[in-house]
Length: 179
Image (cartoon, rainbow, N blue to C red):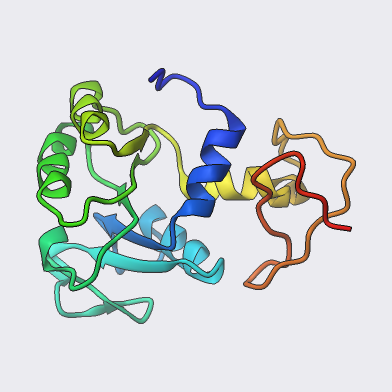
């Protein structure tokens, strides 16, 4: 797969297909990007599980923190990586040891490791690199446009009301009609 660009439908389908997200490198510090990504995704209705050995056993945003992926007592659909690129192969080792395997491996902005991504894809895991699920969700739902940011998504369709912190939800396909 080409990890330099992603089709909007691919990203939207992934965000629709996952319910439980493990955030590797989650921080309890409320000014860190991983903290507000966790908060945003929780507010959107995802079940978010923080993974950070230094915070293990303590809650972050009301969610119990685990030291490693294998400590999480339930299956996860997506692993979101807030670690440096050189840490990704080790995270992929942990991901590939999980049963069942997550559907998605997602690495945050500036985080990319093509060899590790290829290993995950060979095991049937979808991969997104150098992107933020919070930004992608906001962009595809139109929320990011509320701040004057060009989302690259144009639609004349009436916004779909959803539940959660913000009322507009993610559309997966152009054919989804709110009326």
